[in-house]
Length: 361
Figure 1 (tube, rainbow, N blue to C red):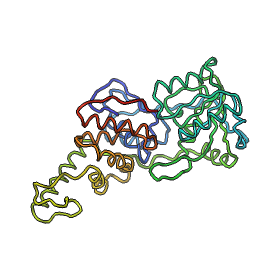
Figure 2: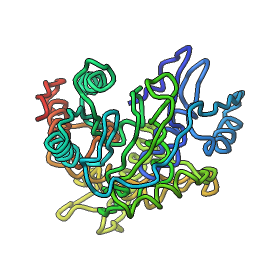
Figure 3: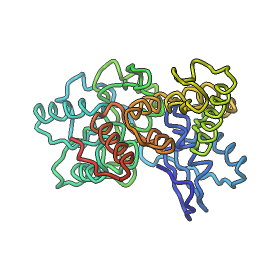
Figure 4: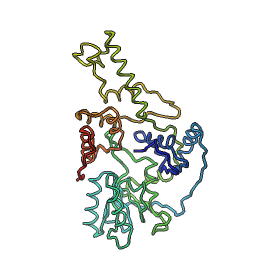
């Protein structure tokens, strides 16, 4: 997680347009507004520029804009792969959005084409991700095809001849529905093909299914609109002050005999017996009462944080600050091994030590 208490000479924030992400955008906004760097490089889509200007005007920082154009052409294939993975070719990156689909697709491609596949996905440890990338990038690496999630859109240099979208939908954990890919994500993933400095001078994009081609074509042709608003979440200091006010008000109500039954614990005889509001309910109160400048900012979605907070309720001995920090960590709810490792860390902290995390299987 980003440290805001250590001054550095140079910092780089990539994919700055993710400030507009409904759930994770707050982390990018916090970096842009608060990262204590003498020089800050912001990389990303121009759609973020108006909001970046607005934030930096408020912080009093000077902004220099440097525009880069794509040097190699990017073209959409005239036809889909007609739903047949036998049409996958050497140098392709086949993109899907769940770990199970990644490994199922890898097995199908290898059995039907004889091509060998490397895999990359978000929860893969960084050293393994780099190793898989080398297998695909190097001629003697042994991997002809890459099967990957949208993780290929961030932080990896890959020799991709053609990006193939296995699907144009992605599961949204917040809504628990499969939803069409955003224009931003389609452009970000497709743009990994044929990048300057790789083995291919031209990038190609394809889809597996006939019905997805028109959607991807529209996304690639569309200019991203300027970000309307960017995400915010409370800092620990802000949340700590809110929690103290909430608990003090709760005790004052109990002492005055006008306690809110929704806040007080059954069986509390007096203000001294009233326990602090549980962390998950603190989050509910904060979300219900917090106000932001609605023209510029939005309060980012609490869904994942609220779920993690509920998971930690069974862990005794954690301070409120430790619960807050653990719940704002980037944990993927749909990855049971990751969630298990996160809970192990929580229990270790509660026991007074750092603990040892086992290998996720």
